[in-house]
Length: 434
Image 1 (cartoon, rainbow, N blue to C red):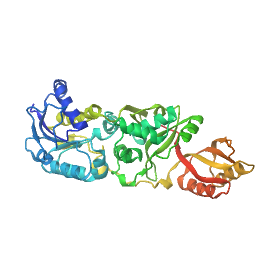
Image 2: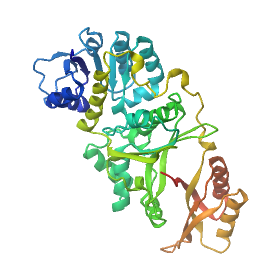
Image 3: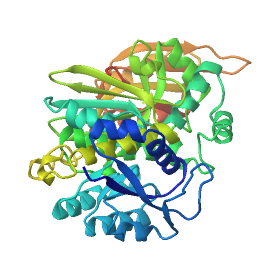
Image 4: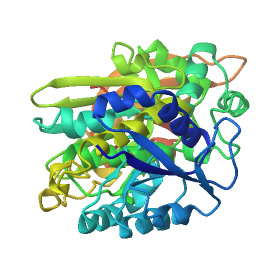
């Protein structure tokens, strides 16, 4: 069969990995699909010494690739929002399939991009946009197609997981570990997207859409970072039998979709609590299959390139087929997408870890428990650490049963107004299921 001609835009970490794997494993890839995948053109601002571009047309204008009549598939690996969106829409307008690793692009502009692709009868594939080399998109969209999926959660940012792992295992401070993560290349010079949960929220938005058949709604995702997690909280959580992980959580309820990223207490017995370092993991629950978990490297040149090429292989296998023969972009046909909304965080129901500094004298604990009891909040576990060094304060840690966030907000406001409580209450949500 006629080879599939590919144009790669961006020759950085993932672009170079994609180019080199296609070259190195060309025979194996061709053997799996019955046709060759050939890189015809590369669009990049500069050459990458890691890639031998001999015999490949190289352009400094990425839009040359999108408009090249000899290119069948454009691989967008430049990142960002605006230019990437223009590039992808240009490629679609010229009748080309697109493969992208750009989770921000899909999470924010995916609805528009997919509509344009469906109109032109082409496919936009994005396996590499979530969890690097883990084939989680295919697993949910195709492998679990028989299931009614109601819940998924994941560690989907390796930088944040590395930081929390170091804090847990070595008692280090957030800032100290972040500096090391930057030196090791795990975190960018501006780490905001990673440590404040924006990167994870992009990915969670995509996973929720394909799992539940809802539109991409990134702007409604609740996002909270890990910069305020302290070694003290990590230690107390450990004493209670929990680990703190930066989780993306999506649930489909009768009232709407929960879409949230935040530090989360996970019981140490759960598999996802054991995922350490820069690794990623996604747990998915389906009514037929039950609980499943997918684990592997969430970033890196060749792991992510592996997912890029998996999309190219899928496109090559169905290249001559009618567009209806290919999987729908979000796993559901457009007319079957459910426009159910995203719940405000105040309406979610979960358990809570609360830490506060209180005056160490009689009656304080009774008052605290009364404030919670008045709102129907029951306590699962409690710890009190006696004052040290002449301080009159003691540290109290509570783990509650499930309650709505808005009710917990009211309770925390009253606790903080209590004269015997010093400063603010530290609150971390807890989850009891994979």
